[in-house]
Length: 171
Image (cartoon, rainbow, N blue to C red; front, side):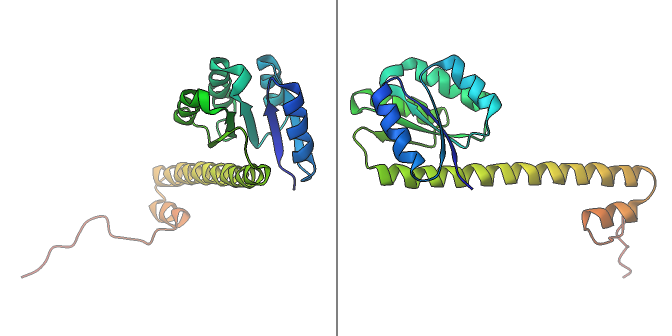
């Protein structure tokens, strides 16, 4: 299965070259330089990882990062920036970015981090589903308990039967 990437970058030449390299890895790469298009892509496509170029976006890039995390909290974002704007990278990390790369960077290192970000997204989604399933199980067990079927509720939750009142020690 390929990774779905969104490459947000204002430098058209840089964006196209980076996207072309990433497509060679059999990944689906979507591109934009406009905030309004970012939201449309996020709603229509199952994006795994976003590459967010802060070089041309500056402070607007942080707004886009916040919006991404609000619309799709499990998407991992990798910031691409210059060393002169390190404060923006730090702020981006505080807002939940997965990693940041300073230009120039090694393309294979970026590809490795993209794979790691994709794996983290999948794990986070699985954990959420597990938590949701656990909550649903608890609600079903509560219904059994409310109906007077405490044993069935315990069985549903995988708990062994325990006495509700401790026996007195005879001495």
